[in-house]
Image (cartoon, rainbow, N blue to C red; front, side, top):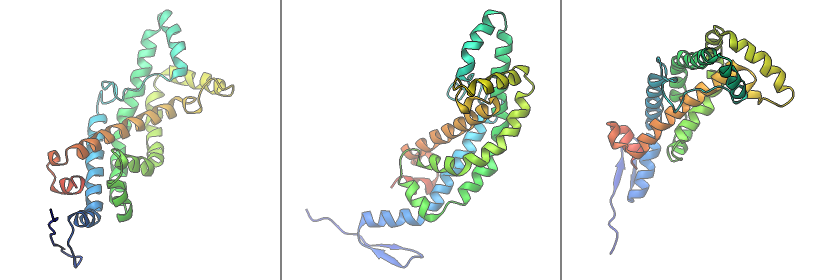
Length: 226
């Protein structure tokens, strides 16, 4: 059977095309930037709202920040000698620090969404399930680390065990017993907080890609439903 041809006129571009696939490609180029920005903003707002509140980390097993692996063996010993409360205080402090830091991410994430280029947008929209989130992480992880670290430090300083951990871990790291990323508790918590943030943004992206119609956004349906 002969394939029917349709002619599409793309307003503002002065281009007429006669192939449905070509039209979809051109439409995606025209709308990709706006669609990507909308998806980035949606993911950022959703993730910050979920995590930047009491128990946003501590009460969510997907992102709850555990003790650094180096401290796990020591924690068993502390528990055995009746120091369970101190371990619990440290874990709570770590997660509360992340919950306090996350709201500071919102303006940086939204600025990254606004600054995406058209070339990047087309590539990202056509990428994998978390290509939007990967873009976000690449653009924002470094500035967010600097933003989060002082907040995390102030919060964890209230727990005496944090300073002791840093002293021991710093010495142990020189002998290769502790990974560099785990040698400082504040940097460890900051890294885990960002991991949790990008994880939740990724979940929102997957939802958009799986069911763009369900987002209720005509733009997201148009871009991610092609």
